[in-house]
Amino acid sequence: MRYAMAIDTKKCVGCSDCVVACQLENNVPIGYCRDWVVESTSGTYPNLETEYRSERCHHCSNAPCVRCCPTGASHIAEGGVVLVTQDKCIGCGACIASCPYDARYPHPDGYVDKCTFCIHKVRKGEQPACVQVCPTNCLYFGDLDDPNSEVSKKIKERKYKRLKTEAGTDPQLYFLI
Amino acid sequence: MHIWGWEIAFYLFVGGLAAGLLFFASYYYLRGKDRIYPATVKWAPMLAPFILVLGLGALFLDLHHKLYFWRLYTTIRLQSPMSWGAWTLMVITPVSLVWSATWVREVFPNWDWKFKFLYDLEAFFIKYRKVLAWIMVFYSVILGIYTGILLSAFNARPLWNTSILGPLFLASGLSAGAAVIITFTKTEIERKLFSQIDLVIIGIEIFLIIHLFMGLLASTEVQLEAASLFLGGQYTLPFWIFVVFLGMIVPAVLEFLELRGQKIPVVIPVILILVGNIMLRFIIVYAGQASRYLY
Image 1: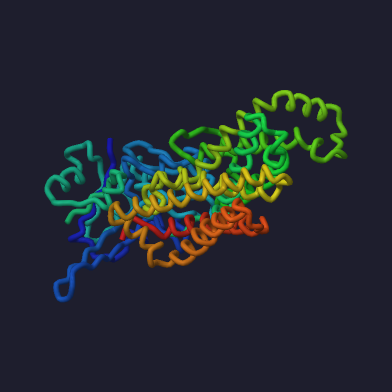
Image 2: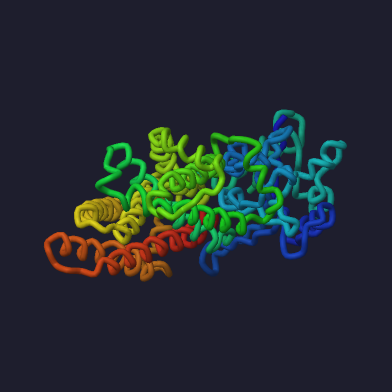
């Protein structure tokens, strides 16, 4: 089982519903975020192109945050999901420094926090909050090892890119372009 | 990104200095030079347990989840240099205290342990000083080098992600240790030895810094961007003036002149080396967090 997410950058309008839904579902403290929207404009006027990406933790297969954690609080759970065991976390910040995607933040309660792919919902058979709420349905979550899952089908049908793969992390967020 | 501040930079300085002091103490003790180099083996290392405790205090202050700090000691994670560091400190802090304790009555003749069991412990550890020295010589090198390896293990921070950082931090710690030993010495022979040692180590540091930049400039775009922080960017002047020129080149020249017979007040190169040392740690910690992968 390999959980992953596909984000359709052609359908994302940058509305940030995913950010708000995540904040409500996971009690993310004000001033921090587990997911965010990036508006990236490239080219020179008048040949400009803008891409919207809803980003979060990439739940990397070669996660540097898991490797550098001194207590094992950062660990890989079912489906390759990267999680933090809150009462093992000492808040040293090594995982924050090690993430090329800046996905983690120090929670005011002391431990380090980030996107969990809403594993508490996934375990009950539901979809992550951001996926459920997206008004353009541009987010797809599922099991890459299941050829019939939406994610598997999308990355077979469409061209995609992953972010900063040269950092060696093997990220599991696929941006459909 | 800003997750680490002065606490980490301060600890890096103190850890490196303690590593240098303890390495020279144990190395020269094992060479049988404890009588010729008393400052190295007996006096200067007495600083080590105190500064290590200060450093540990700074590390504790840095934690966001302070009450859970003990979790560091419920596991050893071989892939995490921070875990090695936690356990290394756990070994070397008490060992450095015990080492100093075995010499304390020689250095301070009026010292009184007051309890018989403490006198017995002192006799025991004096008998096994060689074992202590072997533990110290090994763990002091780990203490000096692991912080550099820790930072270099972060592939997301291109400035740090180089294997030069470990040796650079070790050399820097040894240099600081040698400088502090020079202030404690009372004999010309000891002072001369450590001036020569410091000169060689500074030479090694300059070599490593040159190679750090050669490596960054011959690497990928993220490393080029990281190097530009020091070659025109906001860390250029503090680094080349305070760390390299005032912290390494000037003291090296002064030490060289001293060895040639010129009278230089010893406190000048020592202070320059220590200030350059602490600036190096601060700059590397802050600049490394400014270097990044994602644009």
